[in-house]
Image 1 (cartoon, rainbow, N blue to C red):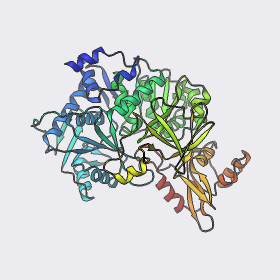
Image 2: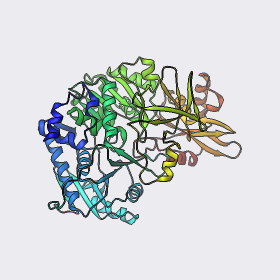
Image 3: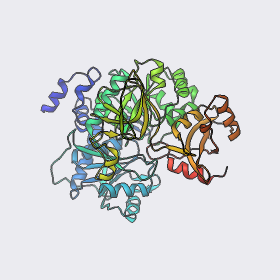
Image 4: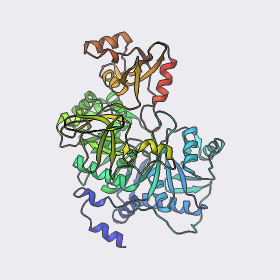
Length: 531
């Protein structure tokens, strides 16, 4: 095959990552199965999957999809296992658009995604969170989804509507690396999700930049504990392992103690974990983290990265904490690297990426230098999404009139081209006409030693319009009152507007399907709970 010869002629991925970005996941998995069939592709508590098994299961999904009457889109609802990745690659090969969402998604969200994507096929496991595939399909149809067939993916086996599929009657019609081949839902932190369109080149390029920033070598073992269907999961668990030709450690459902154990058992060198997850690992098993002797780098993000806990993680493990700033829609905008000093690496979102062009806007006007610039970022470049799926109204909000993709944050960019997030455009509490950044309030409260997780929201007030409420989960054995919290903040000279006026303590903050804090549900909790 000409493509196989071309792959063999490429330099090692870690020596020239950008030389590999033109390859699709389908080509990469097929190549790995040809040259290293018995090597491990995925490791999990359930067992191992070799590259040959991965490739064969992807082909089985492809063949099953091609036996159906021309599905254009399939709704993918699978746990974060090898079967998810094989299903996606199989759909790439069949030319069927995959609309994927996290395993935490409920029936209402799944039905919305199915309807918005025009999915007619449900790709799922025999059982997902207590519901059989048949029952789940019925529940989606009851909610208006047009699901005509159910494709069940299990280790080494694929069935369609409960039966073994026949041979496909049409040839493979694989997507290229530049086709829109994948949709995923926004995390749904503020309401019903929209569908973000993706090409595979977005994420091969992202993985190449991450490889460069972490100074990866040819013998890495990747542990990805983030939800697979979203951007962070795509590059860490789907594309990077195939580009490296190295195993990925995955968990079908995150458990902090199990995660630390797997890091040690498989001597993972690179960890992908959202901020919430690595804080949970710090709480659950700090001694286990301290015994890790292989971990070199942790990529984190998804939410604000708390510096104090990042420093503690580094102190325990010896690994460097890295992050990208970006979004599911924008991809990466800035990043920290192993070559950065502590202040850049732990105190900023890193330098703006060479591959991405950045502009800042304030009330619609561009903010220019010299000096520190603050505003809403807009980007163009190879990491940016083409937009939302069949949603012109949402695209009109996502892009500027001249085609730059807007993010929902307020950031500062300094003279060294380092980026810091200072707030959210929409995540603002307005108290008596004064704007309070929820992100800044959360950063202040998160430093309290009793606080494990925090979300700041506004609660209605007849006099001031809104008052600042913080909803917190506490560290084990800790207690906290509103008076104690505000006194602690005052001692640190915090501006009066940033002193919470309501405190709600909960066992755990509600999370959206993508693993981020679900602000809409937090706001409901804050309003409902008495002071």
